[in-house]
Length: 139
Image 1 (spheres, helix red, strand yellow):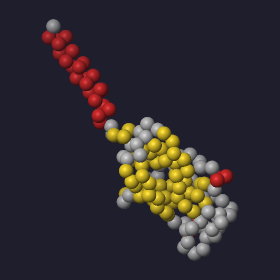
Image 2: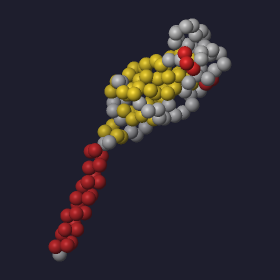
Image 3: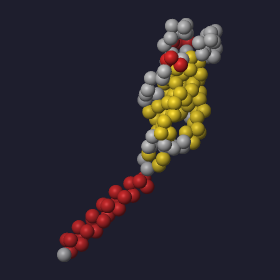
Image 4: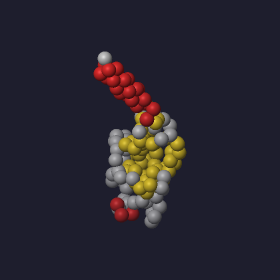
């Protein structure tokens, strides 16, 4: 009988631990550079190199708590109309308000009407090209 009581108490503790798992996660939003943006709309892939004041390792998706972030992006524009060497390319920053359960797809908009001159970076702008709903929870 004592073993059954112990087993019952242990099972209750295990179940309580499983039920409280939701309490250990927090809502989040996601930044994504995974999908190829539509080049027919002059949109190209980007790489995230920094979020706020922290350098990040490049990956296709980042989970962030809801809030406003400063995101540093480097464009990967592959278009014959762009005559900028890789060494002359630079980053741009995008300020983005991240909401819970939203995935923000990031891209570089190529401004083909603006010619590259010297250190000018007017030939592109960082953009959110699509937003989608997602379930996002971070530990």
